[in-house]
Amino acid sequence: MTSCSGEFTGLFSLLECRSHARRAVGTGSVNSSSDASLAYAYDPGSCCRIVLAVKSVWQYYAPVGDVLLLLDLFRRMVNDSIRIGLLNDASSLRKLSLLSYNQLSCYDSPGCYKLCAISRAAGILASRKKSLKRGFPTRTPYAVRPLLVSCYNFRVKNGGLEVPIARGKRLSISLTKHTLDVISQPGVKVRSFTLTQNKLCLCIALDVPMIECISTVGVDRNLRNLTVGNDQETRHYDLSETVRIASTTVHIARSFKRDDARTKAGIASKYGRRRTARTRHLLHNATKTIVALAVQRRTAIVLENIQGIRALYRKGNGQGRKYRGRMNGWSFGEAQRQIEYKARWVGLPVIRLSRRETRGSSVTCPRCGERLQSDKKLKRKLWCSKCRIMMDRDTVAAVNLSRRGRVRFARSRPPIIEAQGGAVEAMKGNPTPTVIHGVDAPKLTQPNKS
Ligand SMILES: [Zn+2]
Image (cartoon, rainbow, N blue to C red; front, side, top):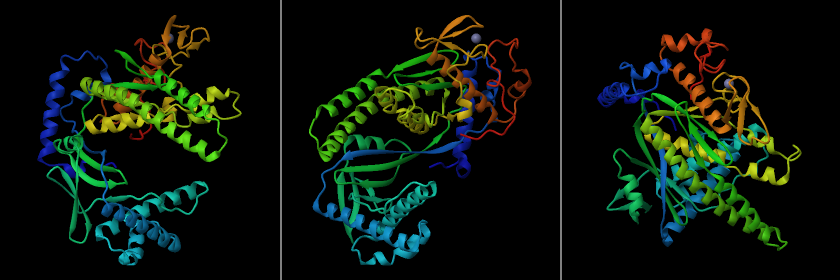
């Protein structure tokens, strides 16, 4: 869903750039950051980007008979297009629409829904193709849930969403105050709507100018906390409650003794949904504060790449069942998702480090670059034998991540002497105390843009 600012170069973006540059200059005098590599932030010539941010807002609604019929009609159209696509081995939208649009003419529905049904079927077929390519077993796809997605012919009018339900017939679904508040924010456009049996979801988009950042903060995701920080300060967001919720859920699901696979699955999914909702709520609180603080201090957020961490906690790896259960119940991806979309919505840059850049971020001394020593007795504290200080593991990780992100940040900018000259200087024993070997020095390879 990325759209670059190339098209938006107009008077508006020009004005935005001007005001950004002025703001950057204005705050430059009070900023305490002494890092030379960040000098570009004050460069009035740098142009700000405008990106498209997308998110959704949803509410419940009371369905009427007509809508339910339409949902089912849509589902059948999707299934028909899937069938046609499978027969002709077509998964691209273009090919599928040429093949199936005429065949859908037997359905008595507004034409716009036919297009959307084809598009939905194309999406399903494309993901099936992807799974096949990766070697995953797939079943013949079939849409089971009644659903309606459309990006055409709807309008928001008099506090309601008007959708066509038959030729020349429109239905108005009243929107809640929350939904109206969200979609009436300045600049917000409603792009599409999704109806299910009891929910209405609106996809909304906004063009946001990117914030010119002056520093970075690293976000270290742990089982029991989120640690956000850089050299200046670090903050811990306690998430130990999520671990407790997860273990309670396991206990509850286990307490039902009936030996029936279907009943068990039903109970597990019910309490699993509850657990997800509660965990998400806690994460939302934390990520909201993280993004708001980052905007206030104008710091880009740096995320580590811990993809594949589940592979560390598989059966046969020599860990206990309970430990594995706890580690596999950790919703680290959700925290990242929330931070990313919230940051995008306000125009805050997010830097995703590669796995290589992430490596060793929690065991390297941020002062001297030595490998830190851990001890069972010290729990989450680490000891640097060179600096002879004790450090908190999470703080170390957050500081390291913020630094590594800052290097990337500097590389993606037009060349500045201070930022480039680091490669030769960053060595152990360098007079500047905080330079880390191989971390603070910008690499000479082309950065992969985040
Ligand atoms: Zn050290």
